[in-house]
Image (cartoon, rainbow over all chains, first blue to last red; front, top):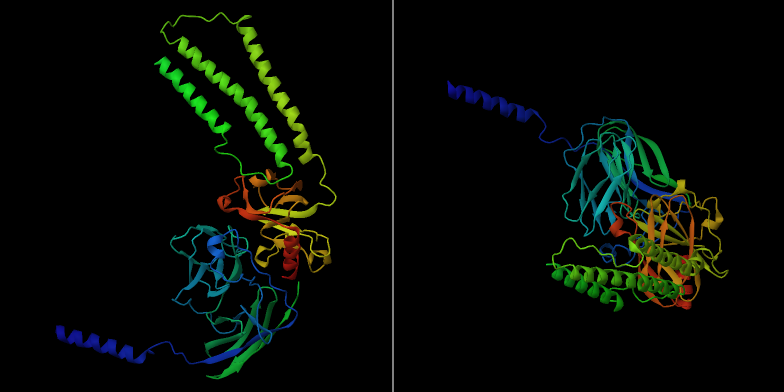
Length: 238
Length: 266
């Protein structure tokens, strides 16, 4: 009798495994493209970290302000490209994202995440930082993180672009891009991005840059194709 | 026991007086035009108050020594004029001393706070904020942009709230995290705070002045020696107070001119 039950259970388990997809299917449409600018971007100035020698000595050449990052061919870095409408938001990925404080800089300068996704904030410096994300929609907080302190774990539940500053080092500056989607990318200095695994449907794709604002375009995905989508943001000098 | 106490008081008095006389822990060498006056003032104050301190402590030790024979009922009546006269006399001496110190010090004080900076003074705008100092120079056009506190955006290096879009004078303003000045030239600082009270202390320049939110406080000085030192905040201003400091560099006139050109090009 016991053997029979065991056999039945085994059969049910095996059948379920065979019917369910082994992994969430990676297939789907892709949107790729480049973000560039027209006009004159502001001149980025070097940051003087002399007052924090432990950070200053980590940089052979002065760190430049990162509010506008450009590449050759007018490409624009640190632009968040994401699905702002269309498709389903879905649950936040189990895999968290990480934000590091190193050399008195935020790495990365812009961090994209889905609402509800785990965010880990580390201090890799030999000095105290006081991280202060200035959120307006989500609850605002600021926390001191001395050298060697454990990482700060936090989750943002509502979509928002949150400027982040350090209350000890005024030049430190970054952004949390809390989005309603898991389909997002932050461009490198070459301006390129790629959003993968999009199920068929009509989407609005938005590009956001901290100084030059947002721009949106529509795209329709029908199968496994790759759609090309380029953004040209208007740069202003001041 | 009383005799032991008298000896201890004497020894402590003499050692502490000796530490001041030999300048064991003293200010760093002064490199400022006004520093001599301030040092003179500090010395006068130390001599006057020090003499009174030593006399008072030694008198205390003497009386303790004399009274240490255990006769508790003894009453001292020998002061000429009695106790009332003694108290009035002591108060008068201290008052005269304090008033004279203020009177003598007025000259130095007014040369810092009442005299305007010389016309050829280099004007540097200083802003204190949690937890850093920033220094602003007028740039090649010689004009400062107008600060708008609501435009302060530190992440974009706009520490002073300038409006380069609409204010052409603001475009070439030089912002530095270090206070860089030429040697032997008067410098005028206009000091203001972005948030809370701070203080600017440069011991070598004998300069210490509080920032008060809402006020623009002018101070002026002339550095007389080429050096690199520190300015520290000496008003507890919050969590990062210990870390609020900046470098002060006194350069030769040529090096300063080069530094300005360098900064303007950035």
